[in-house]
Length: 329
Image 1 (cartoon, rainbow, N blue to C red):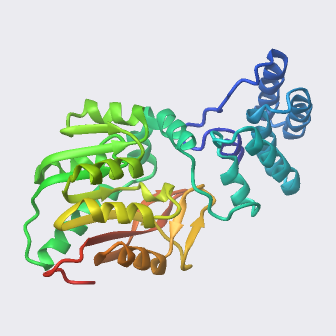
Image 2: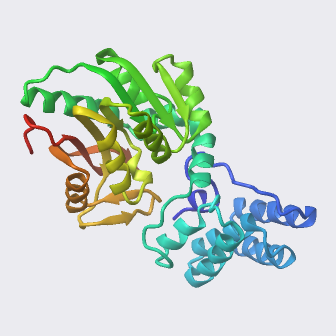
């Protein structure tokens, strides 16, 4: 893992900094980053070690120390530092638990915390569309639309929906792809900055800042029913999909459809990738879809994005409420 991804935010390239409350410790931290930027990783690690002695609860410095030790090949030292960062940052704002999982310490696929995800995407919002289209060749919305249209054609239904819910809508890329075939479009996202970008596009009829699971619970309580639920490039940030799929099944109208993308791997379960995103195995997906009371209509392999000039293994999935008239893939 390169220093850019280890010390800095993996998407924005900007260092996450939360003050220790001690000006001297804060200055030492910034001095260490200057050394790291100049290629003096050993010197940066020494300064950070001194910094956390001065301010033992300085989560940002502990996290940076873990990242730099990892870059130096000192796995054990990195684990010690990330564990200290995690203790000092119980909300996992920095993502230390994910780094520990990547290093084979602690839980293998820990849930990403809301503060971590909110911070990540609030910082990323301004660059999101350009990064996906120009650097990652992201095709999720187009692939989802093609998959839904194909699945509906197989069962003799028109590509038209009264009410669509876009989970983790981000800046509105999926919403824009489906807007021509939808009467009303609702989007929800944890990041207020992402929602602001979606709002500016004037694609949605309703936008909500909030956690997807809590939003689904609220919609269930209100008796809301959606004809189509989308999740484009969202479940790569969710370890266990079972609770969300159960919630989706409960807000689907009769014969309602859910379509989503995931990254995948050759195993059966859930894996945390070196990119700090989750991959879900096909057997796991089939199990959680069936357990939610959904019938699988399509499960197709696809490269949803490209990274480092290589396609990322993914799946495009369409499922429906298990009502009469639905055909299983």
